[in-house]
Length: 474
Ligand code: ADP
Image (tube, rainbow, N blue to C red; front, top):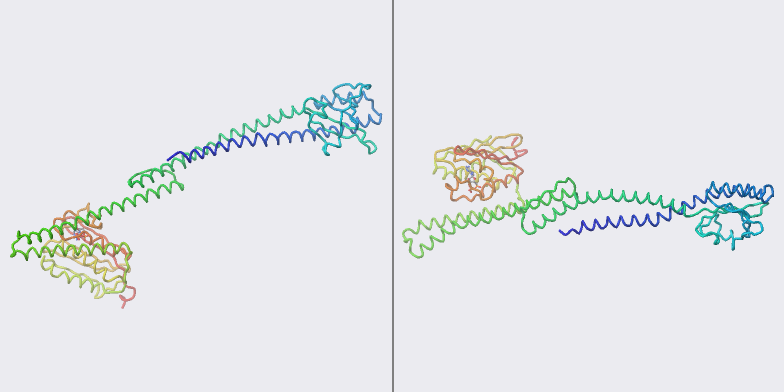
């Protein structure tokens, strides 16, 4: 995967940092400066009005002398670090705390117009070009008998305020820098908990898409991404299993079809080219017929199994007498039992035993189990079919004294086409599909089937069926 997501996130992070600094540098700086000016103006305005109401009024009313007021405002100048003026409405400077005024040479501030300051009590600038640097000038009128006699103006250097504003800004920058560095923790989290797992997931999807369904990957987090990874890996394993099953099925089907077809082809060619003389035709035609029967059986079983799996199984459930079905199925095997001198023992509960299920399909279950039991039994042995009632269920057992099933095969006998090595030697006709059909049918009824078997001693298949609700009580 290209590192685009990571890059995008990093760029977003840097943009965030850049704009953060920009905002602090522009808005932050002007807001701090404005606020400092306003605060300073407010506090100096109080001083200015105090001077206007006391010393200046006394001066205008000739209560105090010019020198006394000069001394006072000089002291205040030091205390406030500001220049204090008393100025007439026309702009003549009457008193200046920074110099002693020359009475004969009055300094006039050209263009002085306090009314032109749009009502504000302070202004920032060079105060009608009276200063070279920018100053903050605060006005307070001297009012006597409801008439403005002059103004007290306090000037303070803006440079000092700016220096203070810059100090405050520097603190903001440092805090911002710390925050920016701390927020890089998000990048570390993002890398470890989002970016890296996502890369692994993407790599895995690429592998799966290219057909490597056995590709393994590990994402150890218990969040949505961990769940996504687990689901993906589960999906791949299911797909792989499906693919493996499919391959196995095709291999098995081909194998099981090939051997009967080979012998049918071989014998018919041998008859046609005269290798088999006509007097032996019957023997070989019988073989050909048996092989064709096997092919038909195989095809039918495959179709049954396919229908069971694709449609889910449609069961036509009724209440029926299980004893009757067992007896009927047992009877169909009478011939083969006589041939192998096998004794079938039926140990059935009561005269009738009503169960609820699909009679045709359950007949097939009994048929498959009995067929296997006879196939894998030794001559002169017993097969026992028994029913037992237990908690509204019937347990049906089919037990033989045959070759048994090796321990290592016991889990696989339910798989399609599976045959134990023991049975491959003995049973050439078996398809390996009977038990998988049997299990599908029992499961479709919501019931269970199990096997207990010891190699060389015999096997017992046990399955459950639901008892019919009413009929058995009669
Ligand atoms: P098959 O048509 O080959 O009998 P099944 O699916 O019915 O196919 O059985 C699968 C395999 O399980 C058999 O090939 C055999 O190896 C084993 N098996 C089934 N029933 C018995 C039994 N009663 N005794 C011993 N082995 C059995």
